[in-house]
Image (cartoon, rainbow, N blue to C red; front, side, top):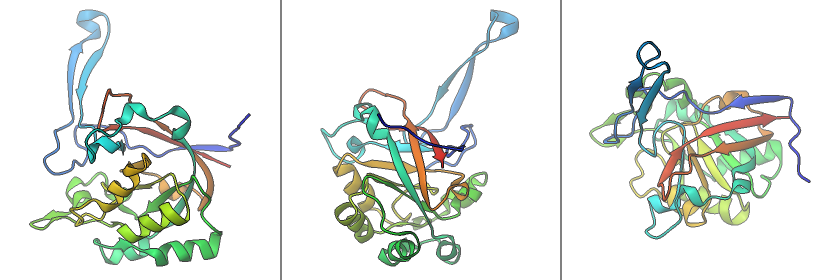
Length: 233
């Protein structure tokens, strides 16, 4: 038997509305009223959202043809221990900051070795910009600007720490200026977990929390908006 011991639950997902930040050229979030209580006796809406909008999880087939979709993840793979690495100080001065091995080493010096099968969450401070879509995406003629995980860092975490995946409070685990999506590609090649647009990371301890990820089982989906709950010891 496995059990989760917790004293508090933190929701790491943003509320979905039609005004949330969107990746450039992604479809808008739309809500259409289908039934009204006054007319039909009940209230019902239809909604439309991109598979990679809001707090979401990416699937391997978003980068690799013939790879699995979001519906193929096993339920037990979506319950994971998590660590949180705070890089706000560096991201504050450099929106293009690339998270490197020194950030991992500094965290491990203070907290011990990252346990295998963990989700490594990076707290950049970008969650505070969510209600300002322009600043959250931070796009100019060169594209989006926000911090993300460097390719070498991801390779180290996968090969040397055997992590289950990564998450971040920006719109991408890759830096905004990375057009190769090296971190996404490395993790999804292993059918790992990639979480983007997380929030409330400031309420999590550096280690000890457990995440439960609720996906929409979209058939062959390239990703899914998710509900991510953190159970704190």
